[in-house]
Length: 194
Image 1 (spheres, one colour):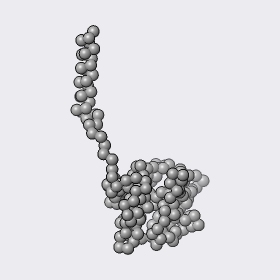
Image 2 (image 1 turned 30 degrees about the vertical axis):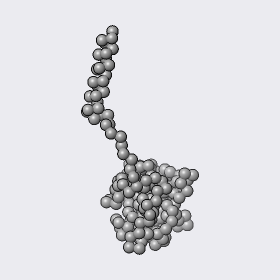
Image 3 (image 1 turned 90 degrees about the vertical axis):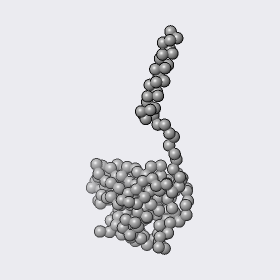
Image 4 (image 1 turned 135 degrees about the horizontal axis):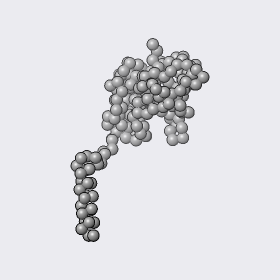
């Protein structure tokens, strides 16, 4: 009986070692990212690690234009529009939720951002490169902004900075002739003028 138990134990150890050496079990512990690490990119514009929700690595200013506090969500979307389209927003300040102006009519120009603005519930479907604006909530009164990277199959994918994941998806539905992203926090999206 003791020989069978010993043999079974040896067999179990051998199988476990086989999995380890076949790399089916990770041999290393993942290293956490630190502020400034490159995490992702969209159209050549890098998403950086902020080092934590309230991380502050100073202000990013290029040629006198305030892009924002480094590695916050606002800094990424403004840097994206600046690097990809050479777009400078007339009002270069404000929290994420401030990018959406509730007094602007659907499809009209948001003068502070020099972008067309669409409400969540618009006749205009969101598009890639649109800037998505989310309202504040209990855990984050400042709101959030991201860049729409892809739209299709009833989904909107975004790329974002200063979140748990650099990419996220939302359901997209047509309801009563209007496009709606399925999130109570989504205020709307902004787009470059054609």
